[in-house]
Image (cartoon, rainbow, N blue to C red; front, top):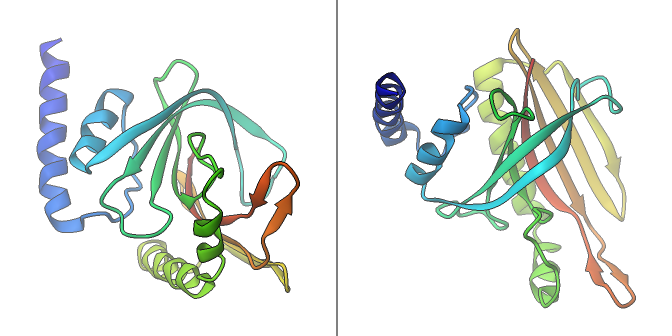
Length: 207
C-alpha cells in the first residue's frame, strides 16, 4: 500500500512539472485508473460519465469491423477554449487494469449531451467550418512533429452536405487516428429536433 501511495505521489509531481510546460497538449502515454482521477483534477476537469460497455476499433487504420469491448471514464476539460469543449475518454479493459485507448474528442455526442433547447447553438456551430478546420490543422501539425508523416490519409466526403477526413500514424506501441467530421447542412428530424455532426477527434489505440 505504501508503495502504491509513493507511486501516485511521484506521478503527481511529474504531472505538475509537465503541465507547467505543455499545458493542454496531447498526452500519448498510458495511465492507470488509479492515476487518471488525479491527472484530470490537475487539468481542471470534471468527470462526466462512466460507461460499462463501449467498443473501440482494434485496428482503426485498416479494419472497421473488429471491436475491443472496454469500460470508459469521460472527463470534460473545463479550461479548453474550443467550442464544443474537449472531452477525454479513457478506455480500459473490463477489469480496469489496462488502458486500451484514449480519445480526445471535440464533438457533440458524449453520453451526457442533450440537443434539446440547443438549436441556436447548433446553427452557430454549423457556420464555423473554418474554425473546425483550423483546429484540425493545428492538431495535424502537432502530430506530424511528434510522429512524422501519416501512414494513411483520406478525404472521405467533400460535398454540399458534409466534409469528412481522417489520417493515421503508427508505432510499436500504438495507433493514432486524427479525424474531422463536419455537417454543412443541418438535418431536422420531426419530434426529435436538429441532428448534426461536428467532430474533431484524436484516438490513441494501444496495441
